[in-house]
Image (cartoon, rainbow, N blue to C red):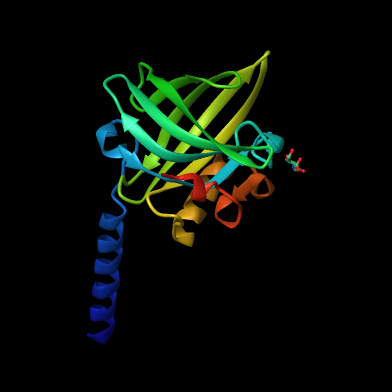
Length: 181
Ligand SMILES: *[C@@H]1O[C@H](CO)[C@@H](O)[C@H](O)[C@H]1NC(C)=O
């Protein structure tokens, strides 16, 4: 009987735990809910120099504006030790959750996973002069995220062929937080 109860509890925990994780997985993206402030938490790329210090893709998000057919991003980038603000507009493509943005090449990205209130994960493919690389990003509503979410993100990176060495936790670096309004 005790064992039965234990199993029942375990079962319920699994069910409840699962419900908490309910999140977008392609096909039911409510993009409006991505509007608002975000922080760059973790970044990964199969071309590591792009996300290393002074790399063009090492940009720190502050805000996403969800517009009719686009997403407006407000970022900071650190150049010569100075944090500079800039904005980009990413245009909605045919597929749900897929966008195009011109920035140091032609970039197509998809929203891989989000729970809207805590995190969002992106996968981007960048093409410039015939060369291609991948970039993956984890944004949080807060300055840091649980290690659970970071592990989940690392698994997604691995699934896209990006190794652990090429994943950078930005929370331990200067993310231009002081430059946010
Ligand atoms: C990045 O740029 C700054 C300023 O030019 C320089 O001091 C620093 O060494 C650079 N970092 C790397 C990793 O190249």
